[in-house]
Amino acid sequence: MTSGTQVRRLSETRRFDVETDVLVIGLGCAGASAALEAATAGADVVVAERGSAGGGTSANSGGVIYLGGGTPIQKQCGFEDSPEEMFKYLMASCGQHRDEAKIRAYCDDSVAQYHWLVAQGVPFKPVFYPHYSGEPPTDDGLVFSGSENAAPFREIARPAARGHVPQIPGKAGALLMERLIASLARTPARVLTDSRCEALVVGDDGGGSGQGAHAGTRLIRRGREPFRRGP
Image 1: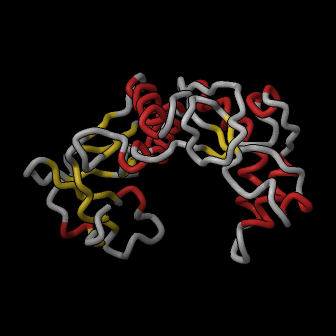
Image 2: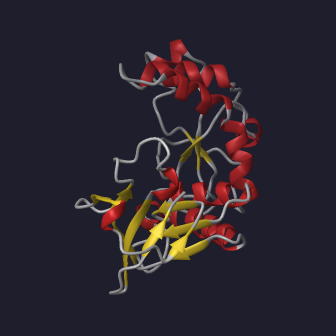
């Protein structure tokens, strides 16, 4: 959505040109992942991307993914890790406004998330890059991307490298997005490029109980003004 995105009432909407179960705004890493999971679960999915292709800022990033708990790459590189050690580190390093329940879920599911990425075709080389770097200049697949091995955190939790990097030298975001978008293309999900989100359409009562079937999002696409309907 843009910074000027508005909320509009259903009564202001002339029509809905497309109906879908799940509408995803933006085809970056989060959007592609959400669309993949929704499509795999059997939902009808539409992805709206304001650019002429997917990728967004995720494709321009270093592509380092924070995973732990004992992934295959960690084990192959000689690091002993567990969801509990990962949890202790993140709880200590994420500041006073951390969300314990979300951090717990993130740590408990981290190994499964690694396998999910591999299933989408994202490659990881089982080699540890020993020098500190958020984005290794090599195609090595594992780095220390945080302060796990620095005081005081190394006394709180067992240090383990958790920065997982797709196998390509330097910035890996483009490769990450290339593989996620390719995986999404193998699903029935529809991707609308050059489609900018302009407004969120809610029920005339403000989107309260019973209005979910009438919620949606207004998009501007190549000079036209279709309305995309959400669940």
